[in-house]
Length: 321
View 1 (tube, one colour):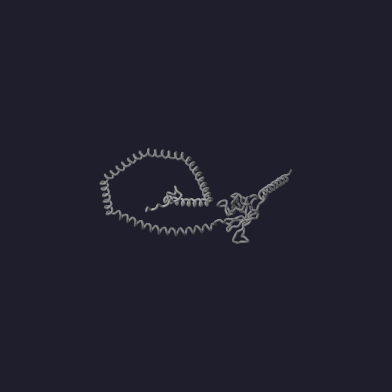
View 2 (cartoon, helix red, strand yellow; view 1 turned 90 degrees about the vertical axis):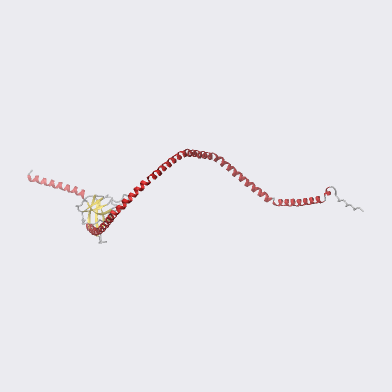
């Protein structure tokens, strides 16, 4: 085989190997099924097509288009594609981010909630605005301006505080002057003399208090057995009450039964009296008549006692002539 044939065979083999490599690499990188979504931001931060899309910090796809929205020009429409099976749901939030501080901007998607509904292809992912560098610079400038005003106010307050401190020191110097020190020394001497004079009385009062405390201890010791006897008495009374409770309850139950029977008897007597009320009235009337007749008989017997022996009244005696 000639050299030219060998070189041609080698070139054809290299081309075939390169084609196979391109085929497998392309099938691995671009042959995957991608799911399109879109989101909207007020500030894109220099994002361009091809930027990485991170789902929970994992590379899941890329940005396909970045342009102003046709419906609302104040918003930036960002179209993206993620690998099929990426669990983008209603609770997922898209925001501007980056992998490192020096890397290009990336679109970061929060994983959302487990029970949230999965978004379908072409739906909008909720977004959250991030603070831009210009906003941060403005806030820093505002804080710096406020800090300058605060420093000025603090300086004024420090001057006022230092003036008050000087006045306080002057007042303290005046209070601790020679005249006041003499008064304080004299007052201390008087207190010392008073303590020296009253110390025996104080000692006596202390001794009396100690004696009273000893007597109190003795009284408490004597009261201890009395309290024990009181406890035993209370226990005996409780035991006696417990023993008498059941018989008393039984007696009360029997008394209640008796009272109920007495009520029933009184009701029966009342019914009987109401039923015999005419007869009783007639009997009382007869008794009243009989009593009147007996009274008349008694009066007659008193006036004519002989009527009990004779039927007729004897004739009156004639007067002698």
